[in-house]
Length: 259
Image 1: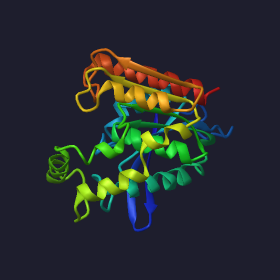
Image 2: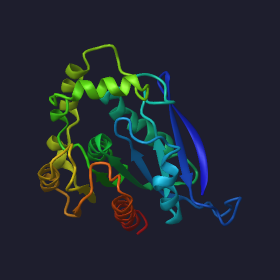
Image 3: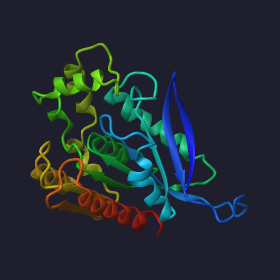
Image 4: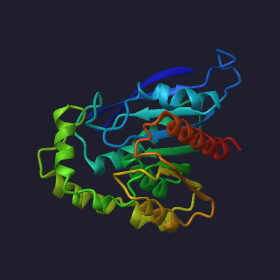
C-alpha cells in the first residue's frame, strides 16, 4: 500500500488528507493503471486520516481500490472552523481535486459515510453525478433532530474542549437547526437512485433502528440493501462486529466499482 499526503486548498483553508493507493507491480506505472476510488466522509469529528490506515485503508487497497480520507474544515489539522454547510460544499471541491489524479478512475467513485458523515455523504451522492454508489454506516437519518437533542450543546462543548473541532462564535444550536434543513437525508431519500447500502447495529443507543429502516424505505434506488448487525453499537466498537461491517462494506464497493 502506498500513501500520498494531500493538502486540498479550499478558499483560504487547507484540508488535511491521505490518499491510500494499492501497490504497483510496475513502479513506473508505464501501463497507466488507474483505480476505482472510495472516499470516506467523517462524522463529528470521526477518525483521523492516519487512524484510518488500519481501520479501512489497507483492506480496501488489497482489493485494488484506492481509498481517500480527510478531516473536515475546522477539525484537527485542517484549518478554519467547522460548519455543516462548509462540510457539504467542500465535498464537491474534494472530488474536483481527486478526479484529476493520474491513478484515479474518475468514472468509478463511491462514497462511504459514517454517523454524521453518513448524512453528509448521502446528500452529496444525491446531487453529484460523479458518485457511482453510496454506503453508510450508522447514519444520521434525519439531521433536523440533532439540534433538538437536549445533549447537543454538551456534545459541542466536549468537542471544543478537547480541541478536536473548532466552531464559529455563534449560537451553534440555532445555526445547525437552519443548516441541517438544507441537507437532510430524510428529505432527499426519494432522489437517491444509485446503488445504496446501509449497515447499522441494533444496539445503537444514539439512533433507533426503526429510523434506519425508514430512511432505507424512502430511497428510490432499485439496487439497495440494508443490514442490521445483531449486538453492534453505534460505532461498532466490538472487534467482531467491526470486522463484519468492514467486510460487508468492502464487498459492496468491490461489486459496484470493479465491475
